[in-house]
Length: 321
Image 1 (cartoon, rainbow, N blue to C red):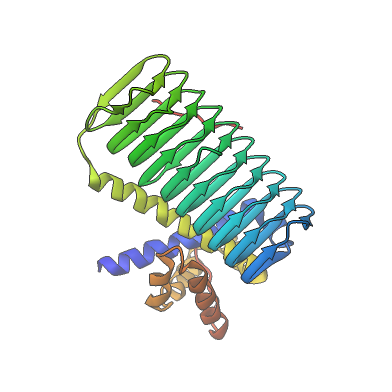
Image 2 (cartoon, rainbow, N blue to C red):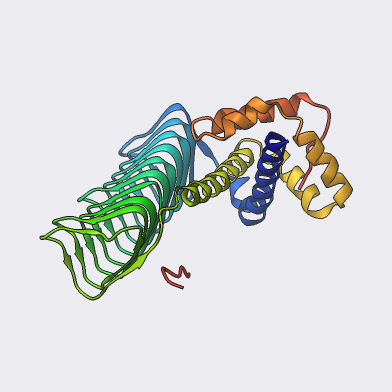
């Protein structure tokens, strides 16, 4: 019963994400040119005009784009320049290039060594901002382990199990640590710190905090962390699956989205019943970052072999545009 409920929630989440992405991105994604493959390299001298979409197993982006860039794969490396915003979804992300707009990263291991002109949002298991990293705006991070050694011109908000700060934060810092928070020798916070943790932070003799340090005592809550990360991971998987479906099968997803959004509930329920018949192995693959792309391909292949139609339906940073 529990497994069936999880399958149902996962199915509904993917379909909801497909509809949402369809509403927001239909006009651009359906007309997009997808670059990628098992091993794709955008050479250093190459430049993509307009929005760029990269999908594959291993992606190496050494060149540049004039506008936004979307990349989804197992391993993604960006050493070039993205002209505007970047959205990267991968098992491993290495960002050593330049993002001229916002950077939104989600993956298992995320390493940031380059620069982001505006805001950085990162969701992952382990997130490292090296001493070469530079963010011109605010930073929002959800992870298990976070290490910050670079420079952040704006404010910092972190939700993680273990956090180490050894860099410069020019805006305010708001950190929630489920286990520990450490400010080491090179840490420099110019506008104070508010943090929540089960015990007080470790403050190195060389660390500098200008302004007040406010400590909010909390009890250890491993279960809460798991639930939070599980919810975020499932949301990420649903969005990745939705985007890949739209990129790889634009006609099918357009038709499914339109019917789901505009037809009556009976058709939606029939479509949901068909969707739930997808083999469990697809759902199992889709619960891992590495298996997302195979799961989508297998699921879509199953659909094309079927004659049925799949239709179904306080404190911290304030992010504004």
